[in-house]
Every structure is written in C-alpha cells, then in structure tokens.
Amino acid sequence: MSLLVVGTVAFDELITPFGESGKILGGSGTYASMAATNFQEDPRVVSVVGEDFPEEYKELFRQKNVHTEGIETVSGGKTFFWKGRYHNDMNSRDTLETQLNVLGDFDPKVPEAYRDSEYLMLGNLTPQVQMKVLDQMNKRPKLVVMDTMNFWMDVALDELKEVLKRIDVLTINDEEARQLSGEASLVKAAKRIFEMGPKYLIIKKGEHGALLFHGSEVFFAPALPIEEVFDPTGAGDTFAGGFIGHLSHTDDLSVDNMKRAVIYGSALASFCVEKFGTQRLAEISRREMHDRVMEFIKLSQIDMKLD
Amino acid sequence: MSLLVVGTVAFDELITPFGESGKILGGSGTYASMAATNFQEDPRVVSVVGEDFPEEYKELFRQKNVHTEGIETVSGGKTFFWKGRYHNDMNSRDTLETQLNVLGDFDPKVPEAYRDSEYLMLGNLTPQVQMKVLDQMNKRPKLVVMDTMNFWMDVALDELKEVLKRIDVLTINDEEARQLSGEASLVKAAKRIFEMGPKYLIIKKGEHGALLFHGSEVFFAPALPIEEVFDPTGAGDTFAGGFIGHLSHTDDLSVDNMKRAVIYGSALASFCVEKFGTQRLAEISRREMHDRVMEFIKLSQIDMKLD
Image (cartoon, rainbow over all chains, first blue to last red):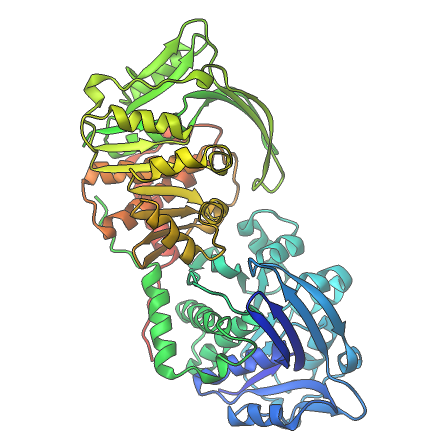
C-alpha cells in the first residue's frame, strides 16, 4: 500500500568507542523510510533539508525507491545537524552539538500525490509539525503510527495530546510511557494512554525488547542479545519504519499481524546497530532479513508441556 | 528428586508505597524453598537462625513439607534482620537497617541425611559458606545452581571464583554479569563466565524478563507486565527456587527443560511480588500456577508465516 513517512532528514556525526563516523546521513525520516524499503514498499518522505544537502544522498534514497519529492530544499538554508558521543556501554550518550537550522522553521508541505497515502508514519518531530501533516491528508489514513520523545512531553504536552487523539499506534520508551501517563506500572500507563487516543501502544525498551499493548492484551517481543553494538543511532526510527513497512506491505491490521510487525521492526533495528548510520540498513538482503526474523522467533520459542 | 537449599532464613521489615509489613519471615533460603514446594518437592534447608526465631515460622515450613532439621538455632543468638524502603517506582530501594547477627559466624552443617541430595541450590550467601556446603556433600550433585550478588564480587571475588568452578548454573542480574565478566555486551559476558565454570548463565532482569545462555544458545524469557507490584522482596530467590524446583521434580536436564524451568521460576516470581513476604507463595494452587505459566507462554507467542 502507499506509505508516507514524515521525519527529519539530517546530518549526524557520531563518536563511539569503535570510531568516529564523520558527517553522515541521519534523521528519523531517513531511518524509518530506509527500513520500510525492505518490504518492497516505495515510501514517500516529507521532510526539509538545506542547500548543503548533497545530491548523492538524495540519489541514495531514489536508488532504494524512496520518493524524495516531498523533501523540501530551503535555498540558503543549512540541514539539521546532530553530533553525539556514546559512552562505553553504548546505552547512554551525550549530545555534543545540535544545529536546528532549517528544521527550526519547518512548515511541512505534503505533495498532492501523497495526500491519499493509506499508511502514515509520523516520525519524531514537534507535535505541531505532525499535526500539520495530518491536516493536509485528503482522508484519514488506514493507520497512523506516531513516534515521539520526552522532550515534547516537557515543552509541548498540550499539542502532543492533540495529535495523540488522531493516531492509532504510539511508539515510545518505558520512561516516556511513565512520564506521559503519570503511572509507574506500564500496564496502568497503557490504560491511561489508550484514553488519550491510541488503540495500540508500543513500548520500546532497547536491549530489553519491546511490549505491544492493545486493550487488555500484551505481547512481549524479545531483543536479540548482540555481541557488539557498533552504533545505536536510529534504532528506534528503524523499528518504527520496519513496523509500519510490514503492515503497509501486508495491509493486514489484525492483532496477530501487529505482533509480527513488532518482530520485523525489532529485526531491522538489530541490523541498524551493526554499522554507522544507515549503512547496514541499505544492504540487507531478503534472505538475511528472514534469517534474522527466525532468530527472533527462536529466541523466545519454548516447547511447553504442562504436567 | 532430593533438593537441598542453602540460604538465609531471616526477618525482613519492608516499607513500600502500599504500606509497612512489620517484622516478617524472609531470607533467600526461605523464598527459594517455599517456591520449590510448588513442585511436590520436599526441599531440605540448611541455614541458621537465633533464639528469637519463632516456632510458628518453623511450623510454617513444615506445613509446606520443607525439612527444617538443617536450620541451626544458635542459643542466645539473634536472627539476621534486614529493613528496607522501596521507592515509588518499586524498582529501587534503600537499606534502612542490616543486623547480620548469627549470620556473621554462620558455619553451615549439612545433616548426614542431606549429603546425597541430587539438586543443590546455593542461595545468596558468602562464597565461603557456599563452598563449605559443597565440601560437605558426599557426591557431586546432579545439578548445582548458585545465586550471588555484586557485594561478593566487591569483597570476596577470589572465593567467589573458586565456587564458580564447581557449579552448573549461575543466576545474577545484568549489571552483575557485566561486573563479573568486565564485558558490556551480555553475549560476551556469558562467554567469559562460561570460562569460569558454569555451563548455564541466567541473567535476571526483573521487569525486563530473563535470559538463559548455554553455549552459543540464548533463550529470552518474558516478564509478565504487572499492574501493581506490591512487594518485590525475594523475587530473585523465588525465581531460583522455582527454577531448580521444576528441574528437581522433572529430573530432566535438557536445554528445553531448562527453558521451561526459567518460565516456572518467572511465573512464581510474578506471584511473589503480589503480597508482602512469602504470603502469596505459600498459597498458590496448582491450577493458578498452570494458568500463570500459560500467561507467560502466551505473552511471547507469535504465529509467524514468513512471506
């Protein structure tokens, strides 16, 4: 089906215990759309970059069948830039530099041809931008998935809550779920968040896996214990892109298929962290993805005969 | 089969956001043996208490078919006491008071009748005490499971490593696995720890589930998202007691059965946290345990057709 991804297309510079990336392609829209290309979808991206954004990166998108018409280039502007350093355990990081640049005034314009998209991924951005995209759609998409973060809960909670009323699936981490709901228990947090709008809540827990809540049902997706996490940047956006990519590809919104989508998202995120940036995401073969998904299934498979 | 549990039998006093427990029965030996009684095993306990330890608590053990001949009473001595306060999120706690009392000079004496036990649980205690118990066994048990904590890694690492050479299964949390191995990656940590002796490593991650490592295999056991954790005290010891209780009951040391044992341990731990102390553990019906185990299985069950 048609899939629209809204998010940042940006420059990242990463310092990890394994080395430095230099200035490379990053951003939530980049990771999510690249992940979705693994499902033979041709995702459409709405984002903004500056004049300094190289043509070769746009070409990289097109090679993967990502539609770039919705990536606005601001003349005289500079692309969003983030620089960070990961600690030795790779679980925490420090921001060394953030240049909002053209993202500061981002006024998203959804091309006419994208406005009937049936699957919509609202990547991590200001709630105001996410709302403007929703407002430009010709009809309510079949499925709206939204990613966000604690920062927007701190500075734009009212706007965030307005967007929440209009989405189906929210993806956040466990601390964010606690902050948004005011509940320490994730079961209670899910109930509160359902009252805010979403029918599905995915709690991303990184190396601890992911939880999918729906009504009173819970699904616990494992994370693959990884020998060497090389660069965790973009893993959450990759998860979200893989999740909606699988759903858009199969066009099946049953709970069982949502669970499969969580496994696909997790599998793609596990590839993402193997190399700097989107490098690994762009080269995954169909065979590799299936093998990785099988590893995830095997991880929590159990032959239980109750005595 | 015959199961011997070595651990503390003690008094706890717990302050949680839900209330105060007063001085109640606690200790690693208590939780582990109580958990094991859910498998029609009659566990034997080796521990030490003071003269202040009430007869009614010993009677409680006997009602559950726990053998108490190995619980030494030191005349004139006082029982180990721990008092702690849980924070609002129930994931962290402060120790308010620790009285080692008779535990300070604990010189374990394994009754002759216990020395042929085929399953041995070394609960969290000084490595020296754990070693003394191993030395008193007439033959190497079929399976030795050891629980320990970061404190012993700090103050008695050499002794701990000597015990590790003689056990089969080590149960610790993720931070302890990192500390013991010096590796941030849990996959690498498992490899290092296998070189120290154990053939199985169980990493307990509380609300994030548990990982079972064996050779190059990994099994990821989910944790049941719980609406209200009332008192997490003893959950780890309960897990270990449930794990070895299932293995002793089935006398099957295959990897598949180890995975089942992890699920049984997790299920019992999920009961443990529902009430203060061992209260909930002592009243679980067979039916309830089976239903809970089925909930765990359902939690990560997925119907995956690869396209």
